[in-house]
Image (cartoon, rainbow, N blue to C red):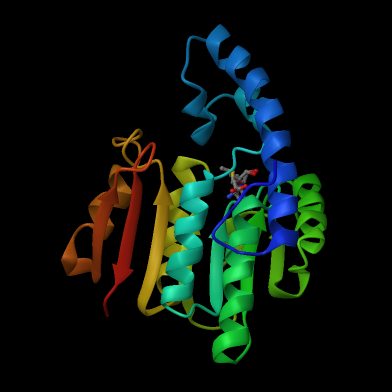
Amino acid sequence: MTMKTVLCDPRADAVLTRLDEEARRQSAEMRRYYDAKKQSARRTTDPGSAADMAFVRDKFVALDPEKCDLCYMLCRSIKARRVVEFGTSFGVSTIYLAAAVRDNVRDFGGEGVVIGTEIEPTKAVVANANIADAGLGQFVDVRIGDARETLTNAGGSVDFLLLDSWIPLVRPVFDVVATQLCPGAIVVCDNVQIYEQEYADYTSFVRNPKNGFRSVLLSHEGGLEISVKLD
Ligand SMILES: C[S@@+](CC[C@H](N)C(=O)[O-])C[C@H]1O[C@@H](n2cnc3c(N)ncnc32)[C@H](O)[C@@H]1O
């Protein structure tokens, strides 16, 4: 059955349904892998060992659909035209972000882009194909390489940033993009509650109003941090 997302876009929904089915097929394999290690499957957010890193290399680890829906809504609400994403994988969240940018450009004019970034070249190739299948290729630039380098210049002020990748890199990547965020920009970061300690350097920064952000933790699975840059 086709997924019903908030996008109201049958073509994108068809691609998202296919990707969701593929990701679900992987989850059994992931459960077995992490059960054998007596570890939560959510450890994929921080693949510590070289073996874990090799295991997740071809895994989706996609953002949950309701979190993706929320990202679409937030991007629409602030009329985001320049969106940056750390962690593209096979393009699931990117499709939602690109749909928001497309719809904002249609409704409010101007130009728009989602700058994705993915360190695994093979994933980036598939992501681009999925995004094209969804009819959103013209709104996405997936930069292949380490986000700490690929995101140093987003080409203009950034309205929305999604942080959805391996935890140790989240704060360094945030630091790279933070100076490019416009006032009112929104930053979304996944899983900060389940990995409270690991994310402490990030959350302590965005939760301190002296750093120019206001931040709330939403109770979505794993905890979703929503931060707004105020100055
Ligand atoms: C949690 S997944 C992203 C899922 C994606 N947002 C989605 O909804 O489908 C994290 C991705 O970040 C990528 N990644 C890890 N380290 C990276 C880095 N230094 N630079 C860019 N991408 C990186 C991983 O290869 C992985 O595909």
